[in-house]
Image (tube, rainbow, N blue to C red; front, side):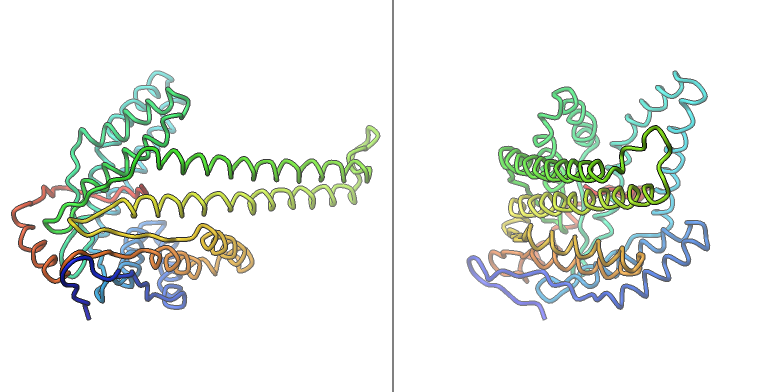
Length: 361
């Protein structure tokens, strides 16, 4: 039952995720089997089933979200992506000039495709029967997907954090729920601090990996495994070298998993703590340490089970991230819902031939 909040700032309404690995495993294994049998065609229907499972098991103030995407529209977006990728791969081998033309054409059309996909994604998301929407314009899409990446590359990525801030400001600032507009208030300096922390962590990981590899080489040299006296290495030597190499690669993957959770947690907290919907705000408190533990153990369990733990890992990660988010309501949620529903007709939204282009912003 929805908890009504009246007057002033109400108690935080935390997000709850009610899904389970066992339930999602049954959906995942059927999706996988049918996608393989249909040579990937069923993957569009598989995505709808996956999205509906996660949306319908995400609850806020006693009500769940829903996803209404049409598989045909998703399949259309994937076919477009496949054709574009094929053209991009083949054109340079036919003629370098043709490859340049195709590359420029793709760069020109990509922002428009991503804009249509964003509109599709939010239009097909609902909460308590009321749809979300995206009212960003084509000009804004070209700025965040063409102009800012160009400026970032031109400055040797010094403008990368600023580009990220502008992207989130455009994405969240043009989102709406019913007739209620969202807003983003994150500062550029906050993104620079986040990226500075990520760079320092990545440097520490790189140093750790470098030290480990140097120690491995010294170990191999001291054991005579790198001194073959001009002859081919013996089978016993090759076996040890291969095992050492595999160990080094495994450690590099293991250590690199520390960077992704840190960045993911910091970005989630920064973005949602600076997003509001009307007068209501959000709060995200996901812990980088907790996310690191979940990511590392998920990785190991997926590897040990040869991929069978993957649906359980997805549910575990979703629960960790979603349940760290809460809505901080101002006034009554019931009144807010009524106002959002009443205003939706006045706002309106152009909704033509949209499709899902599988983006992750």
